[in-house]
Length: 514
Image (cartoon, rainbow, N blue to C red; front, top):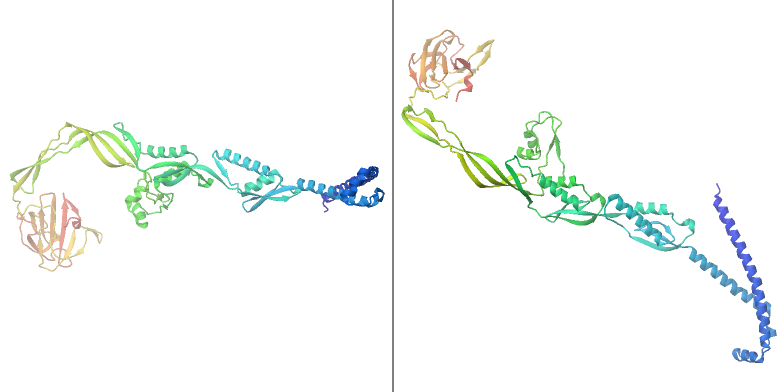
């Protein structure tokens, strides 16, 4: 489709040429009239004798006659001069009217303008808008380059197009406040107030007196903390929470483990080559005994970048330990003792100053201590008389050498009340502990049987013996030979059937043998 503007431009050009030719024609008539008048005037003046002499002398003319000047010869020269002057004037006017600037931002051309002020106004407009948007000082990149060009009005960039082009290529910095800990930057914030809020929040997290009897006197920081104004890119600006998390953890790294069925803190710590203690530290406030599938466990052990030093005054009651005094009694056996006087702790009222680093006590100073109740010493009476060997020690030994051929528990639908120790016939059987023989003889399925009462609620039985070496009423000591292995009673081969009863109830002997 034809561009209608093309015909419009052609008509305008045609009209300009017609206007130019009309002006030129008028100028020609005017020039001819002026030249003709000038020549006639010159002729009149040449009639003056003095004027003629002046001309002859000035131009070294011996003979001068004004009648020799022809209008037809002079006119073309004047016309060339006039047309050249007019053309130069038109050129100068057009050159001034089409002056423009190609605008470059860095290496990129962003548009063409008639004046530099147009770009400056847009840059100021953008800067003001950015400052209002972020509520921060803004420094935009003004690396502009202007190159002289000639352009028609329709070739110039519009205000909106130029603003969009600048926005698409523009980079800018914002004025923030860097938080420095021991001269090391940990984050940049929008304002100095935000940086101060972070320090305040960190300190306040340790301003937690445990009860009404304790008081946090002051909280200081070990590290050197300061803020400084910096210019940076907007994505580098962090929130209070982000910077505080870095300070509290010592890193912005996040590493977590999702708990699976059957896992515990112990298995998780082992998997990541950590100690359980460190895993607990990495998850404050979490009960390590209560982890369930799907729970998230933090694997990063916090190493705070700041150290809050709290000075706390505590008023508390402290227990005073009692001493234990021993009294000897020759009428009591060496393995006997009894309490003559029950000990009782005392009490003292203490005022102390406790210094903590990030909540961990590092120093304690006792300011004042007053005993309000003295402790009562405990008195224990111990025997000095030698203990008879037949007295039970309370610990059982293996009654014979051999291997276990049958264990305690259900066997062939029946309860097997002891353990069977297989050994050769005649192998020695000894008392598992000291005590008194309450039975020695034949007893049904047990065959030859010995029963010993150890006097402490325990009874032991020794069955299927081939030979009995003690009788009822004898006192025996631990390890004393009392019988020999055999196969009497209901048995399939030589072995010792050994039982342990506590308060009349059968127990698994293997749980009591030393």
